[in-house]
Image 1: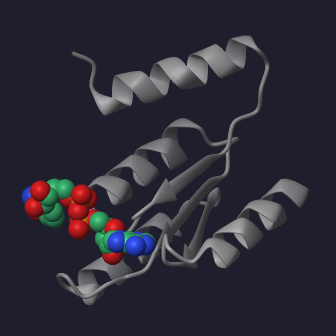
Image 2: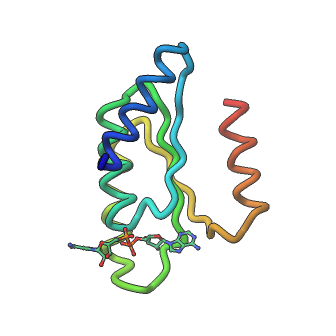
Length: 101
Ligand SMILES: NC(=O)c1ccc[n+]([C@@H]2O[C@H](COP(=O)([O-])OP(=O)(O)OC[C@H]3O[C@@H](n4cnc5c(N)ncnc54)[C@H](O)[C@@H]3O)[C@@H](O)[C@H]2O)c1
């Protein structure tokens, strides 16, 4: 069985072989898993953009989630947007903006 990190690593290596420049879109980046994955990617792939979004819901401490976002923002390649996964219009705008940059 492969861990999520191993799958990610393999996928990045495949794209490097194809000379594709990869950026990452992480949903729920203020959450437990999303935060750690985003932080890992920011540090490991400094030339890639890591775009994280989260609706910052109140299922548990919003303060903790905001603290995680502020930690992630210390990485120059991290960008955050407060967006709900169900908000297709905002998500589609996010794709358009990041594609054009
Ligand atoms: N050990 C610990 O300290 C710790 C802390 C937190 C969670 N956990 C555990 O880790 C496991 C997985 O955590 P996780 O990362 O899946 O959960 P999470 O709740 O930490 O993260 C999910 C994130 O997604 C966001 N989100 C939810 N719905 C959304 C939507 N519609 N649009 C945008 N964003 C949305 C939430 O605001 C949240 O930040 C759980 O079993 C949890 O109990 C452990």
